[in-house]
Length: 145
Image (cartoon, rainbow, N blue to C red):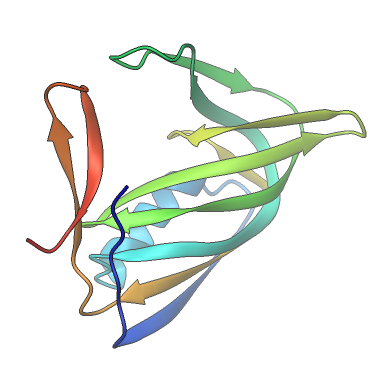
C-alpha cells in the first residue's frame, strides 16, 4: 500500500453534459480546457443511452479484461476516479429499472441520454502519475518522486 498526502492549492471544475455528449471524451476535453494535470472526480450522476465498460475476469496476473456494451436507458448513480498526469481513470455504477445494476471501468463511446454532471477537484501542486510495473503488467499509481 502507498499513500500520498496533499495539503495545498486546488480548484473545483464542474462539467454539465447534454444529450448526445460522449462522457469520457468530454471529460478528456475538460481536462485539456482546464489544464488538469492531477485531480479527482469526486461526484458524478446522470443518464446514459449506452455504456461501454470493462471489468476484470480473474484474479491472476496479468489482468484479463472483459469489454462489453450496455444498450439501454441507464441511470448513472456514481462515477469517480483519479486523473494522474492528465489521464482519467474512471469507474461507474449504473442501474436499469428496479433490479439491474452494473459497474466497471468507463470506456470511450458512452453516450449521455438526458443529462450528466461531474465535479472534479483539480490538484494544482500535487503530482501523481502511473508507472507500468513489468512484473505485474499493470500501471500503478505513484506520487512525486
